Amino acid sequence: MLSGIALIIAFVIAIVVMIVAISKFKIHPFLSIMGVSLILALLSLDISTIADTIGAGFSGTFSSIGIVIIFGALIGLVLERTGAALKMSDSVVKLVGQKNPELAILLMGWIISIPVFCDSGFVVLNPIRKAMVKRTQTSSVAMTVALSMGLYISHCFIPPTPGPIAAAGTLGVGDNLLLVMGLGALISIPALIAGYIFAKFIGGKVKDRSETSASDKQETVQTYEELVASYGKLPGAVLSFAPIVVPIILMGVASAFSMAGLTVAVIDFLGKPVIALAVGVIISVALLVTTGKMGEFYDITNETLKTVGPILFVTAAGGVLGKVISAGSMVTYITEHSSVLQALGIFFPFLLAAILKSAQGSSTVAITTAAGIVAPLLPQLGLDSPARAALTVIAIGAGAMTVSHANDSYFWVVTNFGDMEVEDGYKTQTLGTLVIGLASMIGVLIVSLFVH
Image (tube, rainbow, N blue to C red; front, side):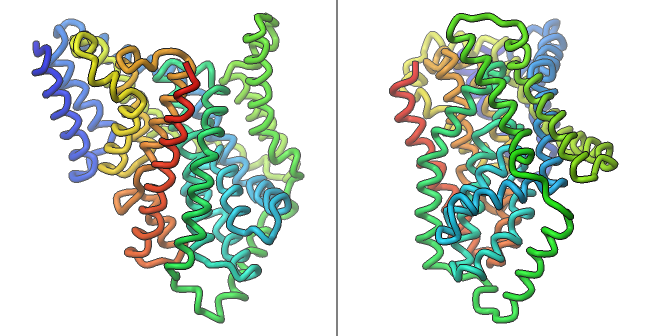
């Protein structure tokens, strides 16, 4: 068995092999991570313990966070299918006003992507973006970038998006999702400000293909109206927001009671993330009933399971990798020589996630893999308190948005639906995600000075 510096070198090589397997040879992340985990296990563990270690890492992830991921994704798809996401968007526009279209679309994206994947969120909101461009004569590129950045920030930061949920579970704060949500919302502020400023700036520098087309205006407005009409009557604003807001309230009340030292069985029960999100699912069913789409519930559930299946398995594979690392001697060796890691502190998870993201493209894979690697090292990094572990989730999310380029499906969604050339995608989407990633990390660093 390898130990000490030899094991660390083997670990670094294994991670490089994993990245190359995913990005260059297009091997599925699940197989890549599991393969690397098995190799590391063979190099660092007694052969009699390998099977149990892998099984414990895999099952532990499902038992701690699997149902939460499924419920969160189910709520998001219901909001999308019933038109509730569109109603939420309209509410934000009314709140911010038509005179601030970039800010409106930025905040709209940020809210929608809390339950809905950023890729599908962009597709759903793009007709609204195009209509707002024509109605307000705002730069189309500025609106594209603002929407993309808003969607991306909450996608990487705020549960019930699967990546942050999985990272919270892996890092031991899965039962305290409200804290992760709160920190995610707080760190979103500098990211949103940076994204808004960048969108306004780049909108004056880059033009898309459609901005000079006189015939596009009527087509765009019709597309938006057809989208609204396709839902029939949109649900009310209160019911549209309820599947997200009610679980947050339930978790918040339970957290407040816990901090006050009060124990009320019902409140504690309802405040558990899996139960709170189950309540959100029940409210989502009410949305389906009121919009006359209850007949689609089976198909929506089936599509949700198909969507989150790969995420669950990649997350579980990340849990296996973390379990193998923690079971070997590498953590002990690092503990004895931890001055370098202690110096990096909160920057380590950010840099690791940024490397994984830039190398293989998927933010969710970067978040879950980085969390699996970082989890055993939290004490050495000085990040093992609940608050600092929750902040680590956000630091990983900041890294996982740095940067989006050609190996990221979201890059192509934004570039194609934003009607931009590929080189303009690099100037807007890639540079923009670098800006918000760095702004987020600055926010994480500032907050880390006050969180212990």
